[in-house]
Amino acid sequence: MPAVKSPTLNPEPLGPEQRSTIDDIAAIMRSAEYTVAMTGAGMSVESGIPPFRGADGLWTRYGTPPMDGFSQFRKDPVGWWNRRTNEKIDSHILELRDALTSAKPHAGHFALAGMERAGKLKSVITQNIDGLDEKAGLVNLIEIHGNRGKLRCLECGRRESLGDIVPLFAPGPCDECGGLVKFDTVMFGEPIPDDVMAAARAEIDRADCVLAIGTSATIRPASGLLWIAEAAGAKIVEINPTATKLTRLCEVSLRSTAGRALPALLNALT
Ligand code: APR
Image 1 (cartoon, rainbow, N blue to C red):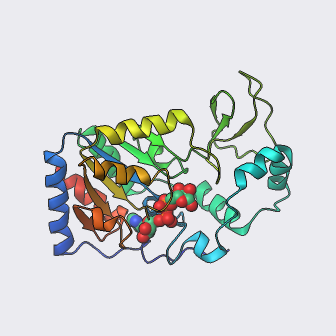
Image 2: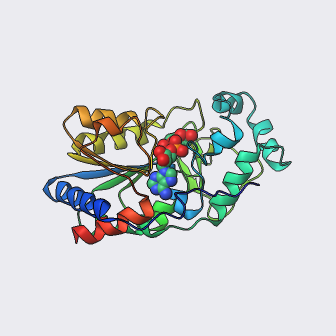
């Protein structure tokens, strides 16, 4: 499997201009009442998990997967699970699964947890399913695309942690209601569970500062929350080595990686 050789995996040290921008971001956060972070796949690149888009993205290398995964699952859940047992699954899933299994939180994840403990960051809405934010100690965390380490009942929403087990066989019906159980990960074509979407929207509605970290801001409804925040008057701060469609709305954009920028931002804040 092609290893990820992302230039953003081994970022350059911060230069004077980036350090000045970090001071600007710290000033914005200090004057804000309620700062929320929205993170994307770029947040976990320095943990060895490839992004989806951009030069080293999984979709860039393997092509975008079918967008009807959820409807295929609902049509034939047992068949879907069986395809995972005989390894007849796409190369990008195998690459992503290997990376997810060995990934550990990096300094950027721990820096966000430090900002939360210092009261400078109220919550994190992550689009990532890797569970690294929780492992780094973040408490007020909303996993808007679910968590690959959990199962979820489609009927009653009951979630169950898998620990380190990656099930290869269809789990039984929900213990609570007998409903259909799947990975908690939100599939393409699957609505974000109402409870999760409501929690994320409530955080965005309270935010007067939103850090957009490592996201291309392309997938709705998650990324749409960034536009909603900006329209409501929140200051948007982008931390990303490359510009995105969100950049033009940002108060400040820092061209750096999560692993470099966030520890420096924590230092500037505390
Ligand atoms: N630090 C910060 N940002 C980085 C880094 C890094 N080390 N490396 C890459 N990036 C940036 C890229 O420049 C890009 O803008 O992270 C972003 C990753 O974008 P995507 O791969 O599109 O990931 P994301 O925005 O999270 O995608 C949203 O799309 O495929 C679905 O469900 C999937 O949750 C995902 C959603």
